[in-house]
Amino acid sequence: RANGVAFASTNAALALAQMGDFEGAERELRSVSRRAPQVVDTRAALAALYWKRNSRDDAEREWEFACDLIDTGCGKYRDKQWLTTVRRWPPLMVDALQKFLTID
Image 1 (cartoon, rainbow, N blue to C red):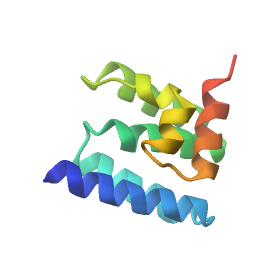
Image 2: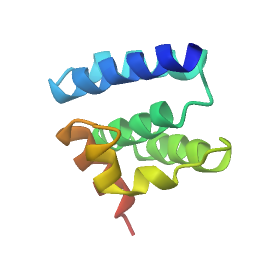
Image 3: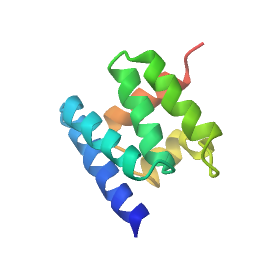
Image 4: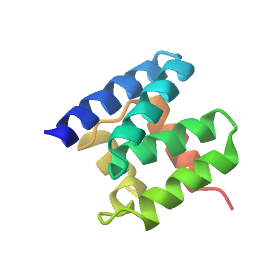
């Protein structure tokens, strides 16, 4: 049940970001990550949002947490097709994560 609430809250934050409310999205995602720190979706969304907001160190920290400190890892989030068709992230956040993942 807790993961369901975390995913619902993450979805709400993703919608806020898509509508341009980056501060509200960050606030919601940070709140979820405190309540449910092991939800990869939230950490990946934070990485994308931080990257979009030019907070590079924060983006790297969240992505590293998602990939290295959560059992399920971040592999699926590297797949744009999965992110858009299965996870159904909004376009702005998919684009932000893709840009983050293509850095040198």
